[in-house]
Length: 152
Image (cartoon, rainbow, N blue to C red; front, side, top):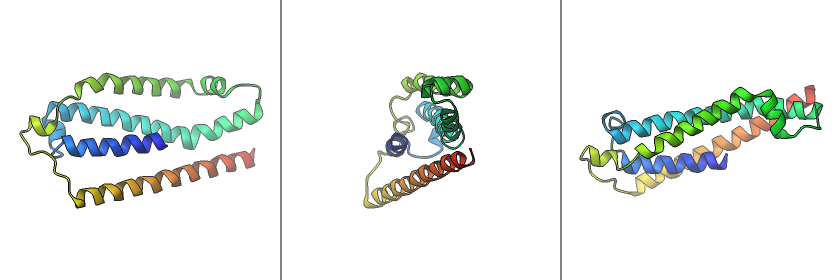
């Protein structure tokens, strides 16, 4: 989850620096490539949430019932479609990255991004909200895993 937070924060910062307006996401080549990448990464984050809330409690249960198997073996045996889906999304993200060059601001002849206290305050608020969200997610996932363990 720390990596998801780091990618989200750095992605938001770079997007603010390189994209001047939301309309530049579909009117510039940079924006289109970035939009495709963001959608693919959202797919990966959704798969991560699916793993955290649905798969991990089931893997923990499978591990309790068959403690001789490794975590990798259990994951590949019980959930191969999810693993391959994540691999495909990850490779697709890597395939899109080379098309993200330059800046949508430059393509649209827009002014460079200017930093201010307001921008940094908004960024700090977003980072704080993201941290709280990820903390709550971890606690909820842990509670689900414990609840599933108690019913087993």
